[in-house]
Structure formats: structure tokens, C-alpha cells
Image (tube, rainbow, N blue to C red; front, side, top):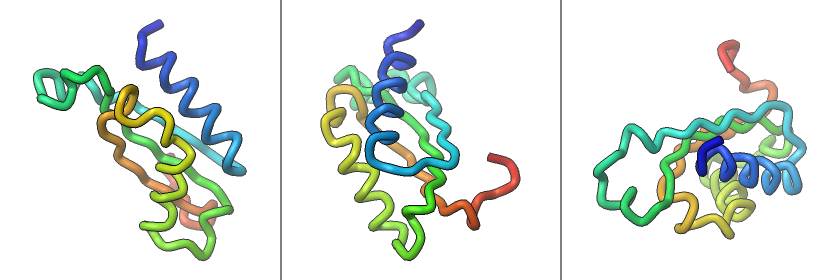
Length: 96
């Protein structure tokens, strides 16, 4: 198991403590950024899709802030960059 797979398990646990999660997909995109100056710090590049009814009534910025707050202990050591798609179950695309 890779370092980033271990990290993802920790990220998921932190998110599950904060949100009622319908679906969650964390993807490690660090390999796409090899050689990038930020990657040299050891933090990974990740993509998160998180579906939760708790996002109802929140705009995109508020949703992202809530996720960043839940993962705050992982920045910048474990997470250098995070791409987020935060949706309610009603906004869920059919391909997630």
C-alpha cells in the first residue's frame, strides 16, 4: 500500500466524522504532477468527489470551506493540492 493510499484512508475518516456521506471518491493525482515544485514538499495532489445532503442550501464556496476545515490538519504536509466536487444527492451525476 502506498503512502498516499494510507493518507486517503485518514482523509476519508476525517470527512466521515464531519459529514453524512452518501458517496465519496478520493483519487490520487500526484503522478500527474511529478516534478512540480509543490510536489517536492511531500504533499500529494488529490481529487475529491463528495456527495452529502449537508451541502443543501450551501453555495460552492461554503461547501469547499467545510471540506477544507474537515481536512485542515492534513494541509500542507499530506495535501498540497485538492480538487473538489461537492454535491447534494439531488445534484449527483449518474457517473459517480
